[in-house]
Image (cartoon, rainbow, N blue to C red):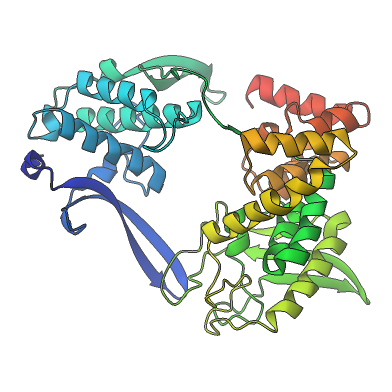
Length: 428
């Protein structure tokens, strides 16, 4: 595995995404490549096959996420830039540890003093350690696997009663100091509902998207992947309304396929879990009203007729995840925050002041959706169903020690909180 071009500074590792469009569906294959100073690919390395989490066995070939491969590329670029080596097989564990030390000690960017989060450092160490361990397992290198990974018997397999062995990185990342902008995950329902009202006034195109996040639990990536019912991409309508007589009885959102929604091939975002979203019955009215207002707006907006996306940007093409996220944040910081500063409600005023020192992202609306489900008295299985989670532990991330929960449901729905706590403690 010789990489002699890296003797100069004109080459670097990068993640290349190969996109294939078939019958309107988009498939993405990510690879680690070598690029020159003109940003042209000079070599497909095949190193992405070693990015699988280390299990002590030979690595499995699997399409990985871009973030995982980016961590690996950054590590390779740093190691070759700071060491006089010619081949990947010349890399030692000390070089990898030096990279970890540099990564954890450096700020997030050149123009900021904000340090990386603990989660970012943990992810970097885990992916890079697994990559080099898989490499050492397959090829002869100067790396001993036990220099990077240690194992522990974590639990008993309930099927064969054998201990399950889990490999974890030997390097334990520690942040040098606590200079970090925290993620603000808690947001009161009143503030979230006011955000919807402000969107209808100042940015009507995204008002329906915010409503879907708040009342259907959609992630931002799912919102921008929606298409209009008349879209030629699929004979199946994306937004399905069921009636009993003249009354709406149910709403379903078809997110079972990730389609290409732009003529330029730009990906609008990612559907994390492809599924049919069923709107919880008490929330149907809010969703349907927002949908009808949105369709009235779209009737006056030009978009690409061969795609007919549900959310259209200023260029007439489907809105991307980044654009949607920026526009929601602008509503929060430019309109919602000044209004809440003057609120007589202490909780609303506190939230406005927290926005000065914490980061807020649209994904917080999904937490507000979860809070509403708990307030409605749903059990763990029902919350998992409407959130579309693979496991019930995901809800705990957004529910633990949240003001709305602690204040309003500790007495009303104690059984749900206790059940969630037991799941968390036992790791089921």
